[in-house]
Image (cartoon, rainbow, N blue to C red; front, side, top):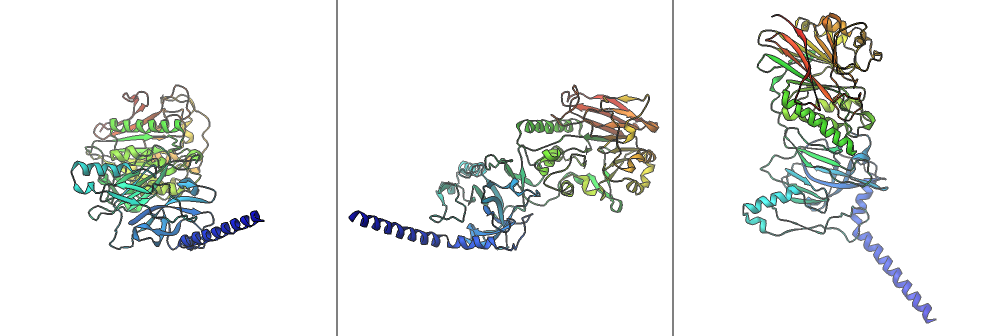
Amino acid sequence: MQRRLRHRRIITILRRLAIASFFLLAYSSRSSFIIHLQNTFNVPTTSEYRGGLIDDVQSIRCYRWFGQCRSLIAKQRSSDDRIVSWSRISKNLTDESLYSIETSFFYKTYLYVHEWDGSVNPGPISELAISRDSSMIPIQVTQDVQRLIKTSDSSVFHNHVHRERRPIIDFFTRDHSDSDIIHSLGEDWKYKGGGIWCKHRSDQDPITNIQLYLGSGFLESRPNWKEVIHEYSRNKGHKSQLISVTREINNGHEKGEQSVIIKDDDVLRISLSPHYGKSLKILQISDIHFRCSEDTIAVLSEFQTKHFISNVISRERPDLVVVTGDFLDGDNSLDYQACIMKLVQPMIKSKTPYAITTGVSDYSRFAAISQIQDFIKGLPYSLNRYASPEGHLAISSHFSKGTDAAIYILDSFHPVKQFFSMQKDYQTYRYALAFRHLPIPEYRPEGVFPIIGQYNEQSIVKSKLFDDKILQKIMYSFNVKAMSCGHEHSNDCCLQSRGDMWLCYGGSAGIGIDRMNGMEPSVRLFNIDGDLDEVTSWKRNFRLIESVYDYQYIYQGQL
């Protein structure tokens, strides 16, 4: 009997403790529960973040049952925990899980920002640092502290302690893995949780944009941008475990682009000033097939490819770089933006104008071709912004002796007849070169013909467009001395065709891609010399970067 009474008392006490715990939990989580309900039935008042001043950054969980993840309601720590609307940092990929920081069955975690509403305090963020491990202080913060210590600034000897305020138990908000106490000796840096640190300084340019990039090997090269964090670790086993965040310091126009001038906006032409007004050198890069994945071999190959391109640019100092397609690897490419940024980094660093035409593998599972093209148009030193709606581009250049040259960069998947009909005054130019991705039927001549280089792929060229059948005739009427394409990895030759016009291949510059045995990753160069009245071409390859080979005359005149 006594044992039974004792059991009843224990059960009663446990029941009361459970009820008390339930009410304690409900009380401590009441505000978070309300926020959770609001996000579940939330009609977003803001869109994803695509640029603008911000005053707070944090990682927020978006649960599966939320209406959407583009905009959420959450507390803002820097403003006494007031509830505000947060905008997710935009990424133009259809699969949102690719750029989530943390993924589970119930939720995904993304980076969100709060856009500055114009209030004075704390003001827009001027500096951002994110640690690879949220329990660690970022290197940039510790470096700033070291600089202060070296200058004997007395403020650094103050002991600043950050204590994260959190309820006893809260099922509706993220339980940060950070330590409860984080020491910081710097006066300016403020901790935002999740390994994120910010500065709010009125004497510095504020951040105006933040972008995310997936994959390994990304390095920021754009003027006015700074890489905030590289290789931000995420869940193990995720397809891409790295995120890179960059920031735009201001919207200043990039230096070095003054040589590129819109000549005639209604026909979308530009003028490119050659070195010393005597010659114009063009570097052709083709078929690199970047994946930007986590595969170790691909990461190494892409690093070597980028280094190869940088080496050629530093040695040759071209006036223009033309990329003739297959810069992506189709379904195998994870983040098209990171791949394109990796490709153009050597050109941006050297301030060399470039134009990119798409190839058969230049598409993404997670984005439309129009998004890829728009991204290219917005990059520094990109001439694609001046292209026609079909993607064709005409570049003119004037030499000191009064002669002119035209460079045509053509899209292989859109007709060209209408485009050339708008360039009739270019028919008087003494020199012209054309570039595109796909070869035309004339690349398979019959009989005996002059050829320089390797010509291994000789299958029938199937015309993608009717214009392909008349393209050489059109180019001949525009005095095109040579046309150069990509697409075929095992061809790097120039062969002579109708009217002494040379039909060339740029070779394949990507290291690690399939090609015939004995062929090396290579690039092709053209030089138009207005003083000597000649057009020449040569190649460099990855193994013999210091040497040029297959040097040839495309045209020799007598001015």
